Length: 186
Image 1 (cartoon, one colour):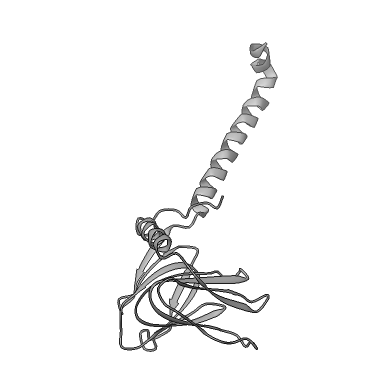
Image 2 (cartoon, rainbow, N blue to C red):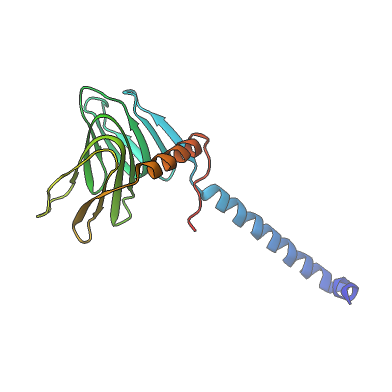
């Protein structure tokens, strides 16, 4: 039966279809492997270490570190050394003023409604980057977290588990420094 299937004129279209399916599978595999963001590490001239994936952007202001301001879009873990002047980090929804030696996680993609900041250690003042009748800033120390959602104009101070954040940050720094692909969401 199989020999009859591959015999004669039927063989050529079947081989072409099989080759096209194989080629399509290779193209899909190649594109999906290339589309996944890879780990990045950036060290700024004032000693800040930034760990992130290539789908994120960290942009120091012109003339950095004078002024000492950075714009962030994406997910980052930052280790910030103690310097005489505070660091200003800007996301779409937040302005963070960092003083002293600090390590923090930022999740703030400009295409999403909310953002989150978690402090492993250090001192951060978080305030909204936009006009709001509810504009009280939040002071964050070790284990402090702020969540913000522009759609409902809500900024909320919470606590995070420092040990969980430490464990996550160690794995995040290892993976990004190794240039690994960003894990797929499940």
